Image 1 (cartoon, rainbow, N blue to C red):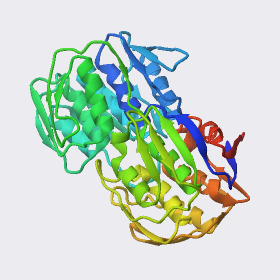
Image 2: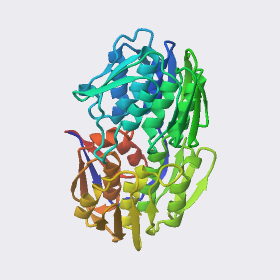
Image 3: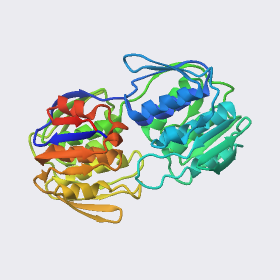
Image 4: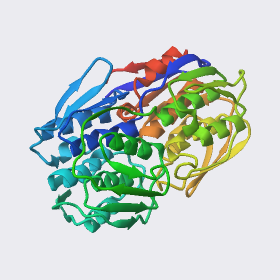
Length: 419
């Protein structure tokens, strides 16, 4: 099992490019199941979850071509299997996203209940209840969702909780349903809007994505298209925090600054000087130690839960004390114990962590427990004395494209140790 070895103390300086968003790529890859015409998707990041999704589509019968620029062409004329087996998708929660497209186009699906990061309960009830309301017959048995349907029927849905994958699954299913489907209390995340934009290019009739009410007028069939997914806002935020923690100066290209307003506001509050161009963010800490900030996570456009661990790491070495409250997932502070092993002064009280910043952390062997916790431990290693070894980095490889290469480009002393 690979590890990352980090020798801390180097300020990050320089320029890197941001990869495509995993959380946009995965639903868009699943959306190709809605048509028998070829779909070409660009700006795909090279990540383990992407590889798993491509393997899953290939298992179903998709013909897949990947070029040297990671543009993927998917042709689903020969789909003949309608199952997502546990053995393939046990580490990837996004496997549930094939359920809606398979039901809408083929009328049947056997999908393993999903796995993924251990950050708390993320039930699929909203997916199943919504599809059942659209006319699907659904049975959960043996760890699988077994669903069948004739043509799905439009319905007016109000989601009990805001769920990104639930919104995406139901939106995809509704594109081929009979009539006008309305989803209330829909997730507003940019990745939902990106999926809607791609579906509309495929011939869907979706309006309202990006707001909490989405309307989908079902059509008889979708067609092929070419589409480039949006940049990864969480990867962008992670490297900005890394630069802030190390007192550095970085320029991040090919990103969308407007998707990071809450994160940029907190970095400015921490003392960073930030300049924005059309698709570029420049951050300069002028060699200064950041100031601690208070954070309250919430669904978009609030502060993203996927940036909470990184800011916890920053607060651990910042001037002053900070309070971070997690409201989205109930078990998303597993990085706290590992940061404490590195000398962080953190107190965990329910869903809140209270941080008193220390001047320097100390390197230690640490273990990643989920994707964003892994990133926070890497960031902590960048400012720690001596060596930090981050174990179980397969979590990082699920969401960050060549993180050690990008950090090295900015001057970090980091390398991968083969397992």
